[in-house]
Image (cartoon, rainbow, N blue to C red; front, side, top):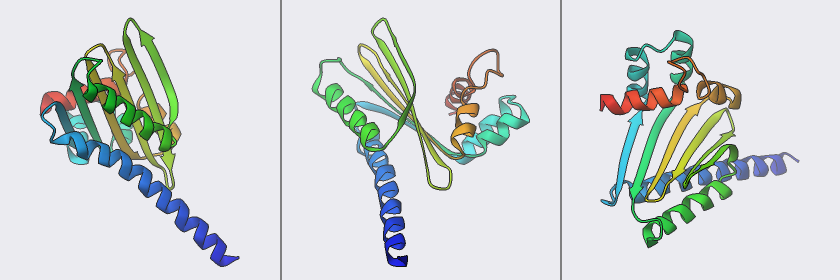
Length: 176
C-alpha cells in the first residue's frame, strides 16, 4: 500500500514538473529568436514596481507572492508559418498543461484568453494570450498563491478603475 501511494505521488510530481517545463521550453525556444520580443521580470523587480507605483499594502502583499512575469510577442502576418506554428504550440501547451479558462474575449479580429492553473502547494500559473491580425502576445505569470489569491490579485479594480495586472505590467515595462 505504501509503495502504491509513493508511486502515485512521484508520478504526480513528475507530471507537474513536465507541465511547467513545457511552458518554460516554449519561452526558452523563442526568447532568443529575433522575430520575437521577449521580456522577463523577476520577483525583485515586481516587488520594486509594486512599491514605487502607489499600490496599496494589501495588493503589495499579493504581488510579493509572484515569482515572475514573462512576455513573448510576435509581429507577423496571421497566415505566416511562424504565427500558425506558435499559436498551435501554445494551444497544445494550454491543453496538455491542464489550464482552466478564466476569460475569453472576441472582438473585431482580436482574441484574448486568460488561463490559470494551480498545482501542488499553491504554485500558480496564469497565461494571458492575445491574438490580433498581425500580432501574438503571451504573458506568463507565476507565483505561490491559491486560485482565489491569484484571481483576486488580477481582478482588483483599485487603481484608476484598471485591473491591477494591467497597471502592474505597464509599470514594470516602463521601469525597464
